[in-house]
Amino acid sequence: MILTRGARVTGAVLCAALALIVAGWVVRDVGAADGIERLWHYWAGYRDAQMTLSPATSPYDVVLFVVYVAAAVASLRSSVAAAALVATGVLTIVVRLPGLWNIGEPRMDGRFVDDLRTRALLCAFASLAAGIALIITAAAGRRAPHDFSEDAPARPGQGAGVIAFLCLGAAGAVTIAWEIRQAVRIPSIYPDWFLGGDEIFQGLTDPPPGWFTAVLALLCLFAGVSGLPRAVHARPFGLIAAALLLGGGGVGVARSVHEELLEHFADLPVEAQLTVATGFFEVFVGVVVLLALSRPGPAAPPPLPDQGYGQGYGYPRPGVFGPPPPSQPPPGW
Image (tube, rainbow, N blue to C red; front, side, top):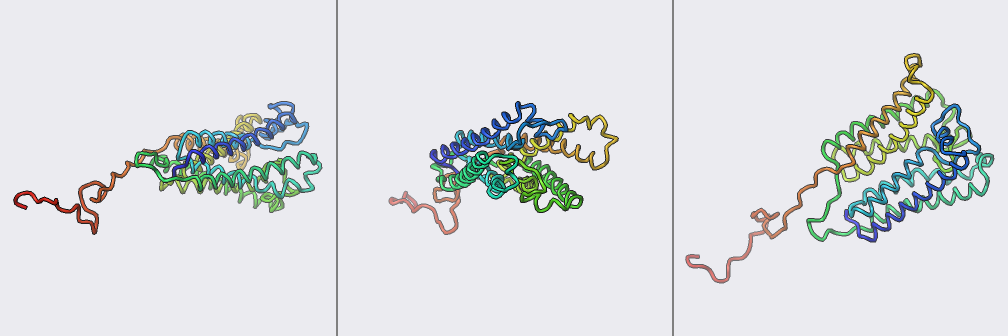
């Protein structure tokens, strides 16, 4: 899928706008926390975290910022970045959609002033519009290749596809397993865990925790299954899933180190040990998949021009009998 130059520029501008929206909210939270260190303590869930005001973001917003910047650069540099624009658009829509019914809820009144909530709602609408526009741009901005020498959409290599299938499939299964465990232990938080409500705590611009967990699990499984047949969309979706896993796992590892859980790992309950191990597992999967999918697989050789002989190999296609005999037969014809 080759994009026109106009579509590539449009996609880059939309991604840049999304990155600016996320950056603006992160800067707001840095000011509310009186410094990036306090905000990080809150994001990571440290017990000594202290916040002057309630934050509107989470550490995943930093990952989203990186995704938007990478998608903008890819759109400008490559004419086959349509899959990256689609993946970015889909991620934006599913992440920002819950804000439409959560930002205006009465439970947000005590934590955020009306002006801030109004801006958050406008940003949610703008992000959704930009996400939809990215998908439309990728679909409407296609053009046919001028010749066979133009680049084809990059697919993952055979080994990279298998790695993505194994690692992302395992990460998706682990995420779902933790969700099942939580549903058994704390059933009272449902359905607020997925849709938002009084039973859970969330940032102003972020989706409910369960919603995001479900999105991450589905994204991992979809990208992993797509990697096995080396589908074109496996690379962008897999890279996004790996980045989210790396961000979430990194927060978990940082919390384990800060709370000195590794030093007392043997004394922890089994479930706490598995929680700590899950953070390291997500970091491992994120790094491995990022390295595996960051480089495209070998390009397929372009087909030879069709001269009426069937792919240029000198054999007529079915129903084609080759060129007519010469007008002046040679001697002995």
